[in-house]
Length: 566
Ligand SMILES: *[C@@H]1O[C@H](CO)[C@@H](O)[C@H](O)[C@H]1NC(C)=O
Ligand SMILES: *[C@@H]1O[C@H](CO)[C@@H](O)[C@H](O)[C@H]1NC(C)=O
Ligand SMILES: *[C@@H]1O[C@H](CO)[C@@H](O)[C@H](O)[C@H]1NC(C)=O
Ligand SMILES: *[C@@H]1O[C@H](CO)[C@@H](O)[C@H](O)[C@H]1NC(C)=O
Ligand SMILES: *[C@@H]1O[C@H](CO)[C@@H](O)[C@H](O)[C@H]1NC(C)=O
Ligand SMILES: *[C@@H]1O[C@H](CO)[C@@H](O)[C@H](O)[C@H]1NC(C)=O
Ligand SMILES: *[C@@H]1O[C@H](CO)[C@@H](O)[C@H](O)[C@H]1NC(C)=O
Ligand SMILES: *[C@@H]1O[C@H](CO)[C@@H](O)[C@H](O)[C@H]1NC(C)=O
Ligand SMILES: *[C@@H]1O[C@H](CO)[C@@H](O)[C@H](O)[C@H]1NC(C)=O
Ligand SMILES: CC(=O)N[C@H]1CO[C@H](CO)[C@@H](O)[C@@H]1O
Ligand SMILES: [Ca+2]
Ligand SMILES: [Ca+2]
Image (cartoon, rainbow, N blue to C red; front, side):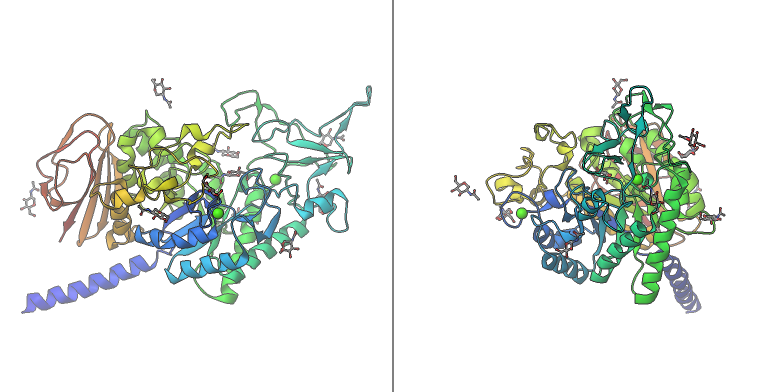
């Protein structure tokens, strides 16, 4: 009787302890975050382009697969020179995507399903068609210096005019474009149709907060800040812009690109993020509700990303995205994965106890194409097995690869192959659209690679994904801030392991073989564990027991999750 009572008390104590541990994890810290690309997700009206009502109709699917929050690529009015990353009106919905009523309905539906909704926010630049830029060209009152204008240099001998500096735009060419009407150059770090705001202008900073407030008041749960490492550029006190030295490498690997010491990663970028965090925290203080999260998109090193979170006195974005897995390719091994995980954990986790894992987005080749389709499910287990937030790009959950032939436009958009329509079922246009054409072609593999087919297959990518998101909600996966809550590493060149523990209660172990050889290990741990998730390369069955004190085998590409309970 006393032992029974003791066990009861112990259980209560454990409950209390674990509840506290899990409670210290805010919603975004262990979220299953899903990137919805509105153009390609679901078309509700047959024009071949995805839209907000389409997204609304599929929110139940996100819920079904265990997603807890979604961020949506830009939905604002835009001439679509950069697919919405060129905003012409920050408080208006792009009409092809729908109306403000559609937006409100989408947000209401998301919240009804207990899904958080995060907007992509594009602060560095607007579209050249934005009213603000048009007013700035005309030097209209208040808008004169909203953008980065300059006369450029005049050659004293020839009298010829040239751009203010040698700065290059991310998508090629000079970062300066001449405007006849204003007789000045403006700066654009991306396309010429994306003029950079002047972020040393307090009016611009205030207006950005107004825009945030507009969407917060409608109920959004946070923002993903685009390209924050490009916000501010160096300008001397005398008004000139310094040339950048050579020695940089452009996104296509070309050297002879300026080393972007004056245009990327300036400390002032981080200060702006601190300012916005203050604004968001103040908003929450006044209005209550859950944390309004600020996610940072910057392809910067971990030192810079760490500063975005906090510099010890000021706090900034809760979650800079971790793009380390975007670099994984066909030659990557479990050891490469370990190196990439360490690169994050050793700095960001060590300082801030924060982690997130991104393997795909709309700017990069999809993982099955980069690493090989046989490794997709193993990577899903690793991404969701690691502590922190998993980030999923639409279609990743069913293992959609790139569709190279989608890149056939004139000019060909090199990022189209990873943006093809979501593959829902085996009907016309993969169930994405009832129209006759779609904005990008549907991958012809859709009859066998789609959501509906994978719902009915026991070990499909979708089922692995669902299994992992369900595990992410267990205590062992949630209590990751405690010491001993997790460990990870390459057990051999090709086998990666993640261990997640709720001390004395249960333990999960992901074992993922990324190689094409059989691997074996002796005496991993003195525990007998049970198979609870298996990919299609595994010869085992759900519920089979495995004694890890003895010799265990992993087949080529086999990836499994094992469970032990006290
Ligand atoms: C944006 O659109 C809204 C709604 O149509 C309009 O009221 C507002 O003036 C526009 N703002 C700008 C900057 O164009
Ligand atoms: C940016 O705005 C500030 C404040 O209005 C102004 O002093 C500065 O000259 C502007 N910068 C440029 C490059 O126009
Ligand atoms: C402006 O200031 C910078 C830095 O002090 C200096 O290198 C540059 O020569 C100056 N340019 C002009 C035109 O005065
Ligand atoms: C990270 O980037 C910043 C800004 O470009 C640079 O100053 C710093 O030296 C870099 N740190 C490391 C460790 O590479
Ligand atoms: C953090 O950054 C803020 C804003 O730039 C600055 O005022 C503060 O001194 C910095 N704190 C530390 C510890 O460097
Ligand atoms: C993988 O390695 C092979 C052989 O060294 C090389 O030819 C290929 O370019 C590598 N692939 C990538 C994506 O780096
Ligand atoms: C595929 O999805 C579309 C859009 O929801 C639907 O109209 C169609 O009936 C579906 N096909 C099948 C076979 O379920
Ligand atoms: C689609 O094609 C069919 C058959 O050619 C045609 O009748 C229909 O009007 C087209 N629909 C649209 C929306 O263009
Ligand atoms: C394994 O665990 C069992 C049960 O806790 C214990 O009896 C046994 O001595 C352990 N064996 C080793 C090799 O540690
Ligand atoms: C991953 C991502 O969001 N990339 C975007 C970064 O910003 C540029 C310019 O706004 C876009 O073109 C990218 O798509
Ligand atoms: Ca549509
Ligand atoms: Ca800028």
